[in-house]
Length: 453
Image 1 (cartoon, rainbow, N blue to C red):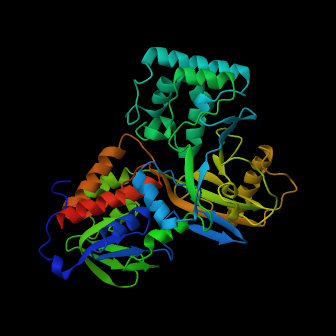
Image 2: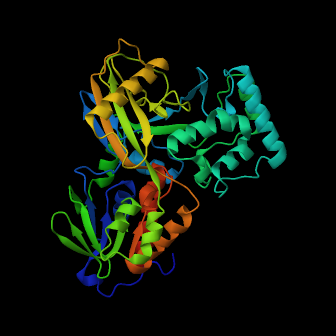
Image 3: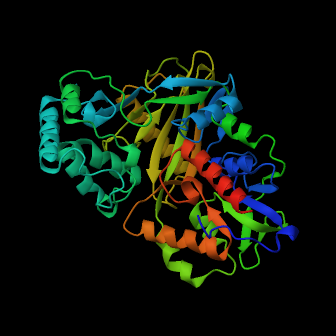
């Protein structure tokens, strides 16, 4: 970080640090900066960004699944200190619905239960790939095309039956345009002998970074966001950023206020921050145009029947289902749904700007979703849905293609050098990450700042 944070001779007359967005990375930055003077600006009326919660009819829903996967002692201590007795640890019960059956997650380690021809093709493909490329030849972070990475890592069968159809549905774009840079800890790569064991019998070995998770007993994931925000001396909610006058380090807010800053930390989606630069730097037009993403519509459903599923969540790779994943908050905490009821979130991806804003499109989508849930055996025709919520998530998944890395590097370096600012977090740094990483991003940013102030 050398050279990133420069002494500001005008700092005595400025807001020392301005944080744009009260998502987890922004809240974490402000918390770890305390007691250094910091202003946090958030357009929503509640803190948390996408880590927010909506309550309706006795049901508690989040903006899709927000589960705490905590791998560091420090973040575990922080979560426990913030939520105290309002925190429970859950063991993952994740499944995949394909070929008319339900198999354990991850698919590549749990072929047992699938039709035998599918098992044979998938395992034979994995064996061939491992013989040809070796078990460790392709670690996460590769810039190989995603489909090539899948076939070299898992073989043609697993790619054909899960990796390709599921990721095509999730990312909503031709997989030929994507690289495998994002895979890292998110795609488990089991040993060949483990895959064989999972093909021959029900293998309950826990794979992956999310084998267990924490979740609030009450109040949804926003309990964490509110706890992080508590005590911040200057948190301004319901106020959006309209312009960033980067040449003299000022920000205009929707309230009409203009705030000066000595350093700016943003966890806004990176395209949103860049578009607000005034004057707009011509050299950023091309890297900005190369940023791509997919959006998600989250359908939160309350069901007037208990125990609709024993799963934490279920993946749906097949085209017969319009959704790619369904999760069950009432299995995270019994307080997420009223007595005698269950709850679920249903995730449908779509291209930005091609969402489900109109009532007619939402009604048609709900019919397709319900039909799919009944086909999968999750809902019955007699089930009543006392609560139906449509929660749009405009920025959901950053698309990793050949242009992403260089474009992001250009934009972040420009912000550091020209606007005296950082852009952090899942959407600020334009990456695929989870909540713990957002919190740690804020901690690191605060620590770097404090060492250079």
